[in-house]
Image: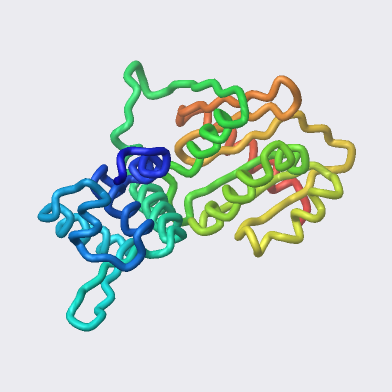
Length: 249
């Protein structure tokens, strides 16, 4: 018999209902089985199992095999769970701008948020992709090598997601070997890169879109500050344009 255990708990955390988790777990344990047997092992009423199995079929987690006059129900490979989870994550990403539109902090048009620690700083950078649309600008001034080294997996994913949005992405970087290599990847990341004169020292990264600006200090203590202020963004956009136009291609 199956009661709630560590594995069924994981299934519910992934979004399955309690009954769906127990029926899928039972099917996975039994192999091809009848509704009656699944209901017995899952400790779910047989009449309920029919509707639960239909829900799992729609999610691609259960299939039907016919042997003679019997209909047997078979759990799909657990790897399917990962693709379902990724699909839900992608759906949330698509809807995120609409959720963000509902997010409102009272007290004026401008506000500041402070972030410290790797997980927290990831949230700061996610702010840059909220509420931006195709051909919006994304500008950054960065010591790209040290910036990237702080969280390579996340920042690589950020670059790729940014590229898919087809933004007007322009990056100003200091003169290092990693920056020179980064410039060679302009087409890969759908962006333009210009390099500052040699010996230019950067201790922070500044990135901004029409919706917010992120100040990220890349030397200890590593912190990030997100500012949502049209006037602050506009000033930095004007400064960025002056720098960009002054640098060679």
